[in-house]
Length: 437
Image 1 (cartoon, one colour):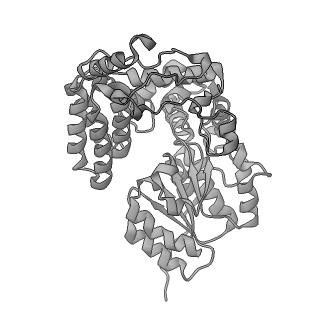
Image 2 (cartoon, rainbow, N blue to C red):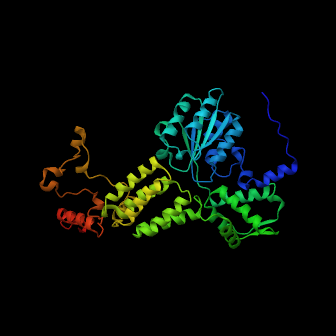
Image 3 (cartoon, rainbow, N blue to C red):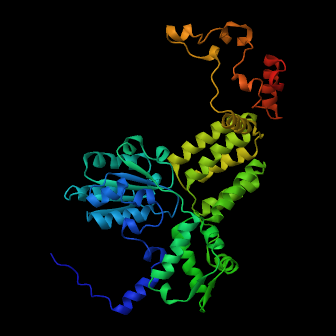
């Protein structure tokens, strides 16, 4: 077997290659103790630190916002345990690539497979991992920005240790900037004055990777030394250099905000426009559909209960279909929700009820409402005088269901729309003035 000869790069070529590497990649730490933030994972007493030092890591899921260290931790594990290490992206890989890695792993020991954005794998793709993880053929490291309880198959999740990564705070993000100025082979040669950081932090949205790469763009754009980093200049450069739609940045949140507000404001035309902006920007189809499910309850609620049914079916449908056809399903749901009657009465009701819980604490359940499965409980009057609604006319009998400290407290006030007016009429007939109905 022959190997192709690859000549060594000259120092000039090496420097040129490094300059083409983004700052965030150049500053990626290779040891857990050098990681900024995530002290609950990187401290010497942490489970992960000890597991890495012992070279005996379990299969694990790293869950956290973008740019807080998930990929970095995976690379640190690869660097420290010296085991065969494979990387796949759930965006561009499928069952074929998974099986290729598993086939290679059968002839190696201690193989680690890192899958970025594992939440984008569908059920069949995740199932392809299950047997290899269960038998110990591979040790899986999955990175996700989504709650793994919802996005990772229960069987696979049960075989993985989940580590939650925290958002990076201002002090940690600023520490990353100072570290880059002091240690990066190119930046440390420049005279940089970090006068203001608010714009850098705001535009990067807490994403450490985006922060460092934006910082490098700003430094290179200013050019002349001393390079003074001030908010106004950062904003000007960012507007010129950064793409209009960034799925993990401020524009992402601005567009989803405009999208939701357009539906809430009953404007299907604006709503479908902002939907198109997200689709063209490559937004995760499940992220959009998930927001529609929330909106169907928060902003439509009992004014049109079918809205939640349609939104939930939309979410399930786009998970099966994916792009590009899911755009049609999303458009149907969006235009329906925007054209529907609106009510936030249920949303306000749960907010007020939770506020009452926070204010009053854990109030005791009235005795007549308590369950009484034993004789002792019955002797203590548990369930005594409870009136079974179905034994009465119209399946209703007036009795108190709230704790004494909250008697007559009204949480749900039906909205002023056709369906909730019917609910109001029903409640008024039953309660005859109680709760203000």
